[in-house]
Length: 125
Image 1 (tube, one colour):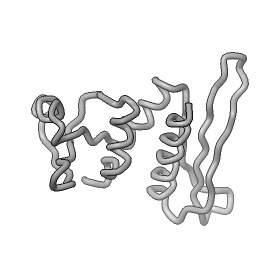
Image 2 (image 1 turned 90 degrees about the vertical axis):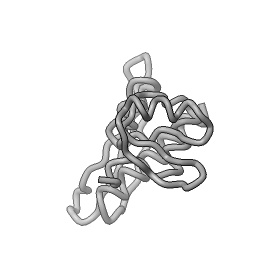
Image 3 (image 1 turned 135 degrees about the vertical axis):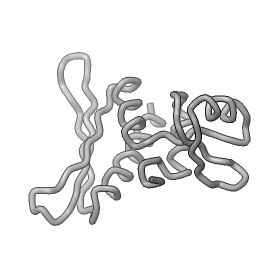
Image 4 (image 1 turned 90 degrees about the horizontal axis):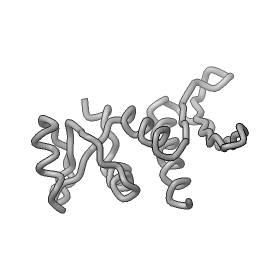
């Protein structure tokens, strides 16, 4: 089940750029370990500097869509061997800017690379 949650580093980066939604998992800063609990307990623990929320991949992608207008997707490449990701930034005039990454062996690697790029884009704003 741990693979459903962002790795430590990316969860911490999301916290830094404003992620603060209810979660069922958190990271302990001292142990650097993931633990799952009820969302109410997670909310209480994450008010302290010793813990921070661990969102699922789906929560993270929704966070970027809803807060920054960035849509990230991962899919199998045309050659059906590799995976790739695409990120779209939709502008007010209806145009969009596309970022992409290619040649990942698994969908999970592609999703993680996509999230890292989303974080990088938001940090540059």
